[in-house]
Length: 462
Image (cartoon, rainbow, N blue to C red):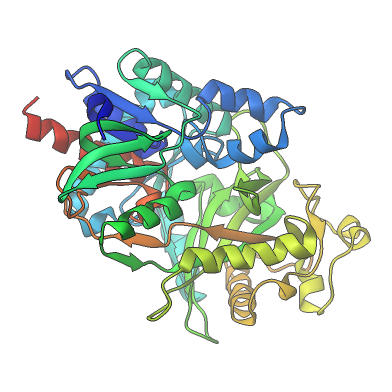
């Protein structure tokens, strides 16, 4: 098949990993194509604000498009090597920290400079939280965090798009059908049945494209390993319960190992004064959280995720996570919400019981129901234990009025075998970001793009 057009570099996916790859290569003489199956950033913003937009557009818009699934997140830049991905498997923590600080500088350059960084001060208060956490069998991981906010994050992504728009070819609303490989060498990508050729291929499809990437690399015979499956709930409670932590470090990253099963449980994506939101993964409704720079609620929300790593012969962790999420969709027509007290009493929540509670839900369209009919017993027991432990450092967290939304699932469970340059066994074919199973957030996904962009520049000596 002859190529319709030849490029030096093709980047599949315009999330943080893809964008930062392009930023590293722009103005360096490369002929670059970025292909994104979702909308451009202005189209995404318009769709999100348009109540009359077609359902199919709203569905795709949540996790696809310029900026990736993080475009409408609360824009937390976690300036630490301790969590947010596995890039320290490919480099030293010192080198990774240098990349993280570099990424932060880029976000600041495009509009984030004025946003507050939490956790850089209050050393004694942080030590006090760590001591209290340790006494409750919790590991508290402090980190410097720059909170951009959902609204500011969208503006930064717009600025990045505009910077790149006249430097690279951008194909939005365009899905890559297949990766073209012949005789052990990358040829390019197939779009609408036509070959677009390239010397370097960077696949950064994000969580939404992880299953597509798995199918494509499986045909090439590339080795995949399964990461742990992260499944749990989003918790919502009055913001004052966690203010002694969130006012100091913004996000409380806590790890616990359950007494019942010795499972690893962690808090994730804490949103002080935030909002619980629905996330649509190709028609599968899950839950997430946002917080804004210029809008507040009375509540704080965060995820409690149970990490479970399966062994042979099981090799489809994403399918398992989708199966659990689908149960919630079947029973509740979407996201289910339940008061913790109702869960402990072995009964479903009803609209009346939610209304009588002391916590006003920020996601009013969630269906009151019973999460014990959705999540496995093991996961429910782990979540209960985590809330009991959390109550020791944040009294009131384990209140009967605390709200649980389900389910929250993170679809980044398959991991490619990669070199330290994040290159597959096929020369000049790189796989990065959450979709490749090596990152779990904005900063490390962006850092992966920097690594690959700089490696391509090194090879071309530009």
